[in-house]
Each structure stands twice: as structure tokens, then as C-alpha cells.
Image (tube, rainbow, N blue to C red):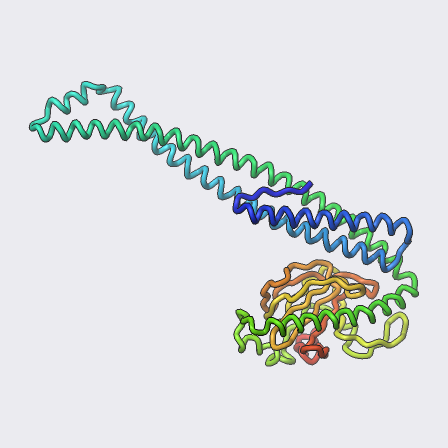
Length: 382
């Protein structure tokens, strides 16, 4: 069971708990689907899809648990600091009171009486009398303060103990989910290996890709329509910043630091089937888990999943330009996040067509040839 108790705000706590519970339900749902499909199917693309979707949910859950861990560790540090401050104040008050007790023991009431008797005037007598009275009141207040600080210290120590218990539980949950993720990733590799042995799966994947291209077009169209509805809403980016993307045509960085271009834009021959199809972007072969970067400043418009494309991110660069990063094994951003050029947005994955990422550039509803936009000298080094 997953739970989180932060001490920042009840609304934030409830929101985080709700999010974690929702993810856990989603993971359990995919778990059931996997069990059902594994009984009926040996190794199919649909089974691979189910693995991928559960892996997405698992990675998101682990990411949230990590964020919760960091937040809780900050709260623990803050509580420890408060305890230290209270202990300092308590020590100071105790020292003051100890000095008073020692002084009173040495002189007792005789000292107080001497102060009054040795007064040289009536006014001085009144002043000393009031001073002794006030002095006594201060001691009473010190005793009261000691009691209050003890209570406050005990309260903070109880909070700390609860936070430490919470952190240990959180770490156990994270470790469990990480083991689950590793196990699922290994099972996925076996399924993928089996799928690659059957040539019919490549033909089926090609058909799925054609359908997914249409789905991606529809997704881009919806984003454009949504943006047109909200175009009166001002963004935090200036007009000049929004126009930088177009100005840098032919000079934009590649989405990965290293890699090999294996699929060009336009009509391409399939390496296994030897048939021809239209590639709406470019494909870059990279080792699984390679960091994928935003090629320019923008805002994460959507995070999606499509058969054949897998996990994908669409970034809005304004002035009607968008970039698409597909076949990601991990996603490190959220919808609505502002990203700058070079921001790591995720990690590359592995599909039936190999370990690679698929990358696209759109201007409105028109697909662009990414090679025309990306820096040619940088690519030449690959």
C-alpha cells in the first residue's frame, strides 16, 4: 500500500495521495490484462503494447515516489532544524534560571531585604521593591517558557519520528516498484525478441504505423485547434523568442548527442520487408536509454502513447511550429512544462524496428523534413 504524509499543505498531500493511488490502480489494471493476454497469446505486438503501457505507469509511479521522497527528506531536515533551534532556546532559558537559583540559594531573602533596607531614599525603596517584584515575575515566566519549550520540543520530535517512519515506508514502496519495473523490462525484451523472429509481425507493424500516422495527424490537428481557441491568451514568451525557431532553420541541434540516421524523411524502403512507405520524420539509431533533448525552447503540449510510435512527446515552439519525439522508454517532463533548448525530456527505447528514436518537425499541419532544419555539420560527425 502506498501512502504519503507531507507537512506542507493538506491539499498537496491529498492531491499526491490521489495521484499515487490512481497510478497504482492503473498498474494493477495492466497487470490483469497482461495475465489474460499471456494465457491467450504467445508473443504479439498487442502483448508488447500492454507491457509498454504498464511500464509507462510503473516509471511514472517511481518518478512520483522519488519526488515524494525528496519532499519528505526536506521536511525531515526542516523538522531537525526546528528541534535544534528549540533546544538552543531551551538551553539558554535553563542556564538563566540555573544562575538565578544558585544566586537565591547563596543570598536567599536576606539579600532581597538588604536591598530594601539600604535604600537611601523613599523613591529608591520603591524602585528596588518594584525591581524585586518584576525580577520574581521574570523567573516565573522563565519556568513557564521552559515548560512550553519542552512541549514544543516533544511535538517536533513526534513529527520527526512519524516522518522517518513514513520515509522508510516510501523507500520500501519505491524499491518494490523498481524490482517490478526491472522484471517487466526483462520480460518485454524476451517478448520483443520472439516478435522479431516472425516476419509477419513486421508487416503488421507497418500497417499499424500507417494508422498511427493518421492518429498523430489528428492529434496535431487537435492541438492546433485548441491553440487557435486560446490564441488571445498571452504566453510568457515574447514574439521575438517565439520566432527564434524559424530563424534558426538549418542550425537547430539534434535531439540526441550521438546516433546514426537510419530512416530519412519521405518515401523509404523497409529494411526487412523491402517494401516502400512514407516516413513522416526521421529515425535515429541510438542505444536504449539514450538521453533525448528538446531541440529548442518551448512548452510540452502533450504526452501521448500510440501503437508503433510508443511513448511520444509533442513540444510547442510557437509560431505554429511543433516537434515530436517518439519511441521513448522514459519521460522526464510533464504536460505544460516550459523547456529550453537542450533540456532532457526523456530516454530512447527499443521497438520491433530496433533501438531508435523517431523525430518529426511540423509547421501547422505540414510535416517538415527534419534534416533541413537540423545542423548539417553536427550530423556529419555522426
